[in-house]
Length: 460
Ligand SMILES: Cc1cc2nc3c(=O)[nH]c(=O)nc-3n(C[C@H](O)[C@H](O)[C@H](O)COP(=O)(O)OP(=O)(O)OC[C@H]3O[C@@H](n4cnc5c(N)ncnc54)[C@H](O)[C@@H]3O)c2cc1C
Image (cartoon, rainbow, N blue to C red):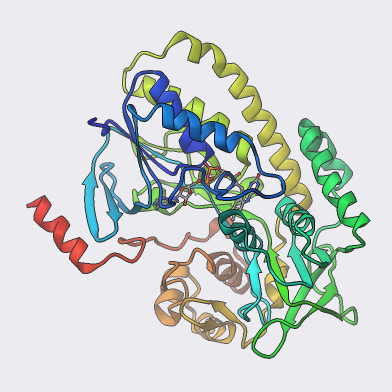
């Protein structure tokens, strides 16, 4: 198999559907993902769990049947992308280079954690981190469990944990109930709305405390979480004085929604734009899913957080657009089904905009960090160090990173970038959309020097 004309990065719903569509059209493709199995975030399950989506196994079965046309390179990381579509693939100690005619980036979303005092204590997780332990290994945490944040993932994970028998002490949602103005959009996916209400009902039956318009403002404990301090918030998610109280918690899960992962598009030199309804910074695309770099396409949550059904639809539609881009014939039955995928895509986008209207993060929440609170976990950079840099006039991500090292550690800013940008915006009065997004660097992930030397030999 040559498998080089098209390379897809990401084997989540978007990447898998794109690969299957190419295979149906008779094209050989390579799909690269850093996980051991195909599935991405939502379909990653290694074991059974509450709410397991049966589409995950169906897609993997189709993938196995199309093995002759789809080369799936698992546990492989893309550590570099260049404007001429050249990519570096790291597999163990080996680095190789590919240069497809079309590159599809289906790299999914990142979580948005909000640093509060005590958030780096053992026993504190992100919502997705806790869910991944359950999905990958059936691992459930010790109770009492407190979950805090905003958005659908908060209620889903709370329900999953409760259904698995974990004692859930409280769900602490910074948002109030969805505003009436969001209803028309939310009703475009009445099935999902009903599902969310079902989660709440089930939690209520279990006697779980539900605090809306509140958040966890601190986590306390010696050597690990023992309790959380919750407080009421105003409409901007600023803490209301005199409302603090403690709740016992051995495990805490926090998450304030998701944002697109734009790093590979950014490395390729693609223009980014800020789309608040879809999680923030993402690669700008034209109507055919192509970024500003010719031949590089972006799909799924990596191009704007909308959800699994949208990712499935975009995978199919983008594959058709790429076939046309390559001058390949598009089988009639695939073309005929495209309008249905387009309709699903539109419904999903309307629903996501309704969700953002209800639960999108309000920047004042980042004020919960105290001077000694760690903002960048990888480099141990505290808020006071960032404030010191800002007071020297280093009010852009680049100089602030160079001074404080925030965002320059192992995760390369995947965790602290939202907090960093909000601190700069607050200091300068600039809108987040007007700030430059922090630069991504090659190699994107830790790469052994031997692997880089090996690539040099190949290139020579
Ligand atoms: C932590 C987390 C938990 C979530 N849980 C749920 C849930 O329970 N239910 C739900 O409906 N939605 C959930 N979502 C949202 C869900 O991820 C998406 O709606 C859906 O999975 C998007 O599909 P996708 O194909 O765009 O991306 P993903 O499914 O995220 O797939 C992207 C894939 O690309 C891989 N990748 C990224 N960068 C690289 C690289 N440089 N090299 C190699 N591989 C790379 C990723 O590891 C991942 O496997 C969750 C999101 C996150 C971040």
